Image 1 (cartoon, helix red, strand yellow):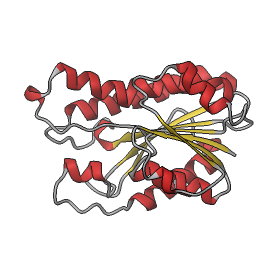
Image 2 (image 1 turned 45 degrees about the vertical axis):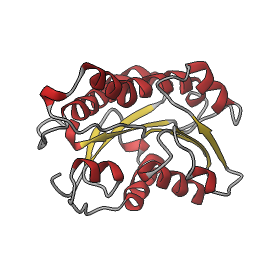
Image 3 (image 1 turned 90 degrees about the vertical axis):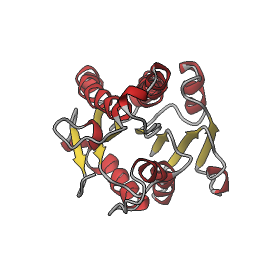
Length: 226
């Protein structure tokens, strides 16, 4: 099994790398900061320091294709959260948020779809948020982040429809509170009920085992508010 994970340098992304390596999968992992990934000793892991907002589709494709002509699972985990009141959120911050949380996912998918087509059971997972789930509780300061995750959810539905003829399933997991640096930034002092390792295991097992049962779905994964 071949897996590509973006935003793999820390938190859920890093724990996803560890999970898939434990299954014997070959993993391509990218992040702006790869210092934690560089401490993992495994010949199944390929680490790429990469800023997805600047990388080209050709660069992404060539990097993954150098490992194999087939990709089974693509997990879009790269994200940025800037906690700032709506009226104080600049146009540049909105652009930065959407570039990382939405446009980078578009770029990576476009680049790697040729490799996903070669898999017998290809699965794209968007890591969304309850902040972008329609009807969920919303919180001050997270307008740009939540809106970007809502866009990612809608993108999931659109991609699933367009790619179904190629057998590529696309789903979005709208995560609730997970004990990560990102959550602690957004909700100082809040103790999340789920650890990063636990959530990574859930995402990993879902991506492997649940493809048959879901396509084009935005699935809330939350036991609390936030």
